[in-house]
View 1 (tube, protein in one colour):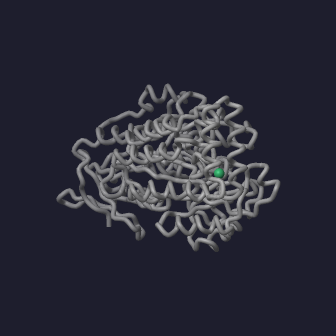
View 2 (cartoon, rainbow, N blue to C red):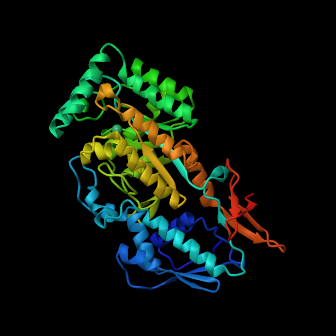
Length: 475
Ligand SMILES: [Zn+2]
């Protein structure tokens, strides 16, 4: 538990402090309670590495933790993506260049640095508590200490031989000649079959065997020659094959979200049109969105997403490398740095994507992609956080990716071996919102803490004491 300053904070500082307290899983407490109080101090700003080396400048006294105001600025820059909102650097898809990300600039994108700052705050608060009551909220449901989510973007449905040819061109350019032979053989063997649906079924089988549910993002516009050439829309969601795939995915209880097409970047109303069109096919609700090619205009596009009724976005990952783009392995609210206010949508940053190493780093061995996934999962687990993986179901031998399906199986098995909580993203977002809403209102004479989430939530949350042992449940 912790008592936060009630005044004297700018909107950005309030956003950053709430975010740190949430990631620290500290329970904000009513002013009258005898628990640790947080104060802000004025220290000169530092760069990221020097804040990390200085344990974020957090100071501990009896019943008080002091956090430098300047740290809050860093939190907004990184986890609020304020730095990315200030840059004008764009790549050829009009995305913010990865090189403009503050963590990439420091070579720190594989570290959830802001989450580590929050854990430093948690440790300092525990130390400052002394004999005062101390509680955190349990991180994940079912007593799990970290979480994982498996997600898929459905980019390919129609015209599969064209994708095989494009991939052969890519492999030729890279000189991966041995692979080309295997791709061609697989493609010829699949002539007259449907390797796209087979790829989807392969992913569904891996997940059914592991007893997990995943989240699928579906393109939902009308393809034209122009959109196909651009690598944008290449299939109609109403086509027989797409409907067949959606029916299979829905029948098992996986979540369906929208994969926003290129048009959404310049035409905000397209979000609502595409969302409604998708709900017309799969039935409501469609709550999640991820942008095709991760094209997002930070601080701007999220307003359009929220306005179209999405409750979460999961676009914040790097296209060309894997890691923690916002410095966190969790769910956070989005921030508009021009208007200096939060945006009414949650962000679930993705950590790892199959094609990041292949398309941009020239690493064509799927086993290496899987190894990278598991490394980042280990990091997410170390901070009690969330790992989100993105696997494209079109990565099959006939479509240009020998050995890839087996690597997906290895990734699922490797992640599950460390016992995370696994769920579709909508469930994870709902849990995180409930966790964020917990407030402590009283401590009884026998030392019991009364806490509640305020509104009805689909979960019962547990508090944990200073030793990490299960304590009270929320009301
Ligand atoms: Zn896509």
